[in-house]
Structure formats: structure tokens, C-alpha cells
Length: 278
Image (tube, rainbow, N blue to C red; front, side, top):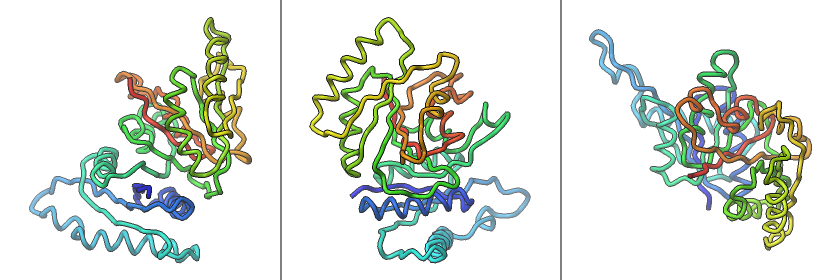
């Protein structure tokens, strides 16, 4: 059974992600760990810290009641999905999410994305984008108004550099849904492009799972990978985009330099981001 951490700050985007998580868990027979992080505060004057918040048990009851009320409003039965409720205090939300996911042995993190604009889009982004930048765990980011749909078509954006290793992870995930996996490669007519594409076709043909397709697209060098993807994706025919997040230096992290982080700021589909190690 998969175990999924679902952080919430009670915002509309987080509530929508909770609804998606419920349907996803029902669809895949998964267990949810609903999580709320309380920011640590330094008490001012003579007010003790414990007076700022309810007790942990009371906060957990609030989290539980809120989730059950949300399901009731949408005429969903809580008894159909197993749920744990976790509340703790942490200085940084993204770190709290990541540490709690590891503590509860979760398989991945599912959360809504608030998006960002202007200065925040360039230098800060959302908590979801920050989490993707630091996490070694898969993160599934859900757009603010996206509703769960049965998953039958997944798009994976690949540079084809480590396709065999990546398919070893992606194929079992795709098989859970009996879905089609479209591996998208943007060809910029580089010196090794033809060789990479031929090798990729061979690796895909060697897979026992039959529903894998290599889709070669002409890349526009004036656009980023995320912009090329936005032009290619068809939200009416695809239920999830899969990307790998590379390891970048401090400047890339500051400016949300990875394509997966940029995509999560303006998503049109749920995005599953996996961590690519060196």
C-alpha cells in the first residue's frame, strides 16, 4: 500500500489537493498522512509560547474535523480511505514537510500549488516549488482548480540521458494505472541527437510493458523546456506530467532555475517531480 503525505494550510488550493488526494488514494488503495505545520514563534513580552496555539491533540482534531467536513461537503465517505493526522511545529514549512514524510515512511508528497508572480515568481516561488528544490522524495503538485480524473495517459519529459534507469522507476508507476506512457524528447538537432533517439527507441522496445511511446518534438531553442512543454501538452488528453528535478547550484535554486520548479509555478496538469541524483 502506498503512503502519501498531504500537507495543508487550509487554503483553497490545499483543500483542492486534499480532495485530489482522497480520490487518488481511493483509486490506488493508498493511505493518506494529512499534515499541518505550525510555524515556530518566539514569544514577545510575557506571553508564553503555548498560548499562541492549541495543544497538539487539539490541533490534530481540528485538522481531522476540517478534512472530514470537506469530504462531507462533497458527499464523499471518509471510511473508504485510511487517514493519519499529524501536526507539528517547524521553522520552515518545506523542511517540516520533507522531514515528516521521511519520519512516516511516505512514498511521495502530494500538495497543492499556490503559484507565484512577479518578484516572488523569480526569487521565492511557492512552498511547493521550494520543496521540489530540496526534496529527495517524489512530489506531486496539484494545480489550484484541477479535479481528479482516472489516469490513462502520462507524459514524461526526458533528455534521454539516463532513460533505462528512469524507465525502471516510471514503468511500475505507470502499470499501477494501466496507463500509456509518452516519453517526450525535444530535439534541438544537436551533434548526438540522432544517436540518443535511436538508443532510446531500442530501450523502449526492450520494455515488457507495451504502452510506452517515444514522441520526438522539434525543440524551439528560444524557449525553455517548460515553455516547450506548455505548447505540447494537451490537458484534455493527459492526466499527469512527470519530470526529473536535477541538482543545481545555489543560483539556480535562488531563481527557481530548474524546469520542474518553473512548471510548478504555472501548472496546467498535476506534475510528479522525481529527484535525479548525480
